[in-house]
Image (tube, rainbow, N blue to C red; front, side, top):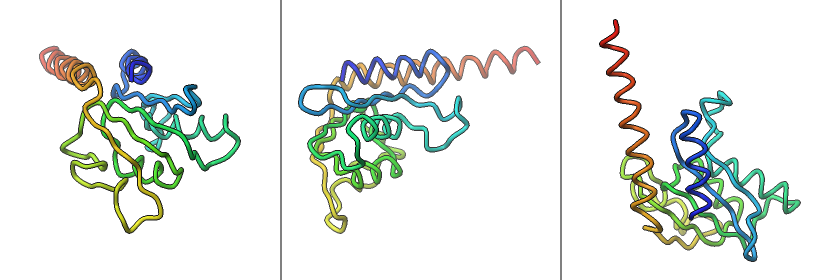
Length: 152
């Protein structure tokens, strides 16, 4: 999760929502990513999607069997679905997302018996640190908006 937090910090530094993800297999990081939706003008450029794409390239196939994904914030429906299709074994989540999370909060796609694969999930990994960077980002964003209004 420390590596995923490092990815989140990269996103924060460029003004992206600070979510980071890494994929590990056999003790080695095979994929990493952070949010790039604004930078790439791409709604699919979430941290998890970037990490999945990189891991698939590095491992030479789209089935990521034996892989574990660490992410700082609970994945959305798109990312949860991609993890199921990629056959990720284990998902480790820092902070849950009660508004849009799809791994236990709003939906539970990764554990849905109707799908062809289920992912083991563990939550609360370095939760305080993962939550703290998100709160700092949105506080900074609110301050910027407030300052922009006062300048008008």
